[in-house]
Length: 223
Ligand code: TZP
Ligand code: MG
Image (cartoon, rainbow, N blue to C red; front, top):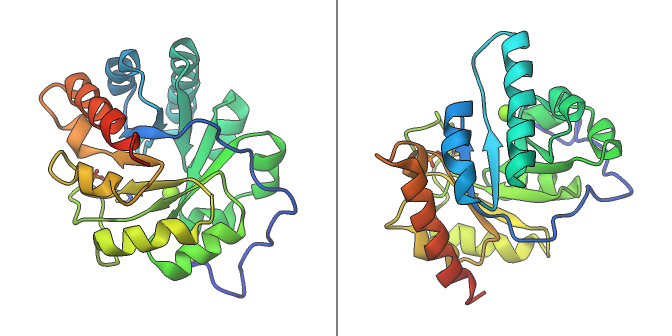
C-alpha cells in the first residue's frame, strides 16, 4: 500500500540516529563479490540491496556484509530487510515508502540504526521527512534501467528544489546518475550520490568508484 494520510506512521518524538559525515559516493550493490571489490576504495557508505534468495541465504549474506563493512569501516545500509539489519548490527536500513508503512520503525530507532527513506516527489518527500529519518533519497533523477519506476524522472530542477525543503536532513540523489550528469547532481547540493549501474556495470567497478570519489571531492568542496 502507498503511504496515505490514513496509514501515515506517527512521527517519532526523537529523530532517527544522525549521520555526521556526508554520505558521499553511495554504491548500491546486490552481492558480496561487489562489496569485496568496492570496500577497499572506501566509499562514503554502501547499500546491500538483495532481492533474491531464501531467508537463510539473505541472512547469511547480511551477516557477511556487516562483518566486511566493519573491517573496512564503511557504513552499511541494508535495503528492505530491517529485522536482519538489526539482528546483525548494520549501520542503517534503507526503506521505500511501502516498506516504511509495514516496518517497525520504533524497533529500528531503538536499536540505534540509521534510517534512509526513498521519495519520488513532493508528497513522498513530505511523508518521509515527517518520520525524521537519518537521510532521504531523492529520485529517480534520470531515467534508469535498474528498476521499474512507476513515476517519471524528477530531473535536476526538482532535485535542486527538494534539497532545501529537507531543512538539514541529509539528502541522497539516485537514479540514472553517471559520469556525465555527476557534476550537475552535485551542484544541487545533495549530501550523497547513490549509483547502481555507473559503478557495478563498469568494466572495473573499483576504478569507477575511485573516479567518482575524486569527482565528489572536487564538487563537494563547493557546497
Ligand atoms: N531507486 C530509485 S532509482 C534506483 C533505485 C534503486 C535505481 C538506480 O540505479 P541506477 O543504475 O544508478 O540508475
Ligand atoms: Mg524496498
